[in-house]
Amino acid sequence: MSVDQANVRRIAHLARIAVKDDEVPHLEQELNAMLSFVEELSAVNVDGVEPMTSVIPMKMKMREDVVTDHAGPQVIVRNAPTSEDNFFMVPKVVE
Amino acid sequence: MNTHAKPSKLIKGATGDWEIVVGMEIHAQVSSNSKLFSGASTEFGGDPNAHVSLVDAAMPGMLPVINRECVAQAIRTGLGLKAQINTRSVFDRKNYFYPDLPQGYQISQYKSPIVGEGEVIVDVTATEQITVGVERLHLEQDAGKSLHDQSPTESFVDLNRSGVALMEIVSRPDIRSADEARAYVTKLRTILRYLGTCDGDMEKGSLRADVNVSVRRPGEPLGTRCEIKNVNSIRFIGQAVEVEARRQIGILEDGGKINQETRLFDPGKGETRSMRSKEEAHDYRYFPDPDLLPLEFEQSWVDELASHLPELPDAKKARFMKDYGLASYDAGVLVMERASADYYEKVAKGRDAKAAANWVINELFGRLNKEGKSIETSPVSADQLGGIVDLISEGVISGKIAKDLFEIVWSEGGDPRALVEQRGMKQVTDTGAIEAAVDAIIAANPDKVAQAQAKPTMLGWFVGQVMKQTGGKANPQAVNDVLKSKLGI
Image 1 (cartoon, one colour):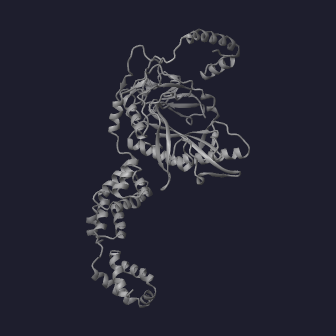
Image 2 (spheres, one colour):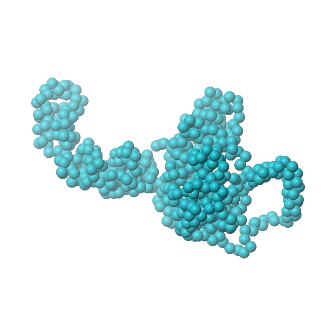
Image 3 (cartoon, rainbow over the protein chains, first blue to last red):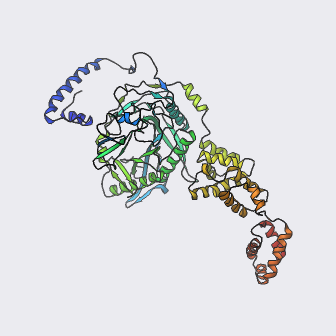
């Protein structure tokens, strides 16, 4: 498996990372180097093997349905670059 | 299932008939106290960002922990849809960027949902029933809310809804008209409300639909579909189906092609329009969420939940038809809401069940609708209405007077029997009094008497006169009998 320059631009766009045109060939090489490294794994036969989800056999913990968390709006928006009336404010996005 | 529409459901185009094919994704907000993966409150409204935990705001290092009750609610819903419950399912990340999704992904279920195939039996009209297949139901997080009208340059983001549990219920493309689409959502909403797993409040956004619409010539393979996002009322769902089908037929008949795309329904303009911005975002790059182990539970828990399910609308309707001898349509109307069904059963208990149904459906529901009230806020209680039905069946009041009595109880309250006494509304069954009234009218109207003897349908005029004179309290049957014998017809 490998990526071409169009893939690189698409991946960057999906991740909302601004990539300049002259950076694309370099990123293409980097990504392909990683992919070929990971590619070694495909030599292992995993037919009929369930993907491992935990190193020890354990079940997902569940919590009871009670309200336990009142962080408070000031705490929530404290790190926001801009906020008003406890709303986060972001550059306008309209459909 | 790939059923074909009946000829009556086809739409006439300029070049022949078309069939509409609709499938729906319903997003139903799970009724719970706290969110799917955090301990923040799910309460509707509230000040901006007041019901948000650091998990919902996706602060670094926060980990999701699943709410057992949300899982139980999904299982109950699956049982209510007669669906396969998967005791092992997996949460995945659905990746996309939007300011009201702070994680940059929605935790959802992709390949392994908690609920598999089920079905919903839908009454489209009094005589027509369809079965809509359910493909799956999965649990996922809701997103926050963006406000775009607060500032010319910025959007405001409120994360109160972020992380609230949703059930996405995906139907098979088994729906063939706008009416069927409306009826499907109505029925699904009824089932959810019976189960108590979603309040179904569409005004608050607790139930929203993505509607997939395509058209085809009868008997042909499925056409290209368009998805109309986030339709939030049952009426709009019907309109959106109608309008979108017409649009597609217009394009196809002009020799054009349908592009698969996401569209938005504008109820004001009565049209759907393209949401182009959504198009390239469709690459969600799902992968299993590494923060969450697979969701596994015992079948015994499912059985336990199943044993506590309430009687569901289909079963209740069948019971009403069998036990109370109601027609399918009347039973269907009564079971639409659990509270209405309970109310009816209270009125019907120990009384003429059909008369009770007539009073609940025609008088009470009619009046409630007119005043925009719900059964919960009905000014007339089930006991009061039952009292009115008793008075009729005992012959104390006539059906006509009963309507007046209903009005009094509605606006003033009180015990129906006492009101009838106090206000002298009792029916006159005493033949002596009726005879006196009849004699007086006959004496005063010799011309009418002659007419009635020639033409017996004139009897109605006399009945009316007697009723008028007795203030509507005379027993109609007694009046008829007396009149017939006195007039000799």
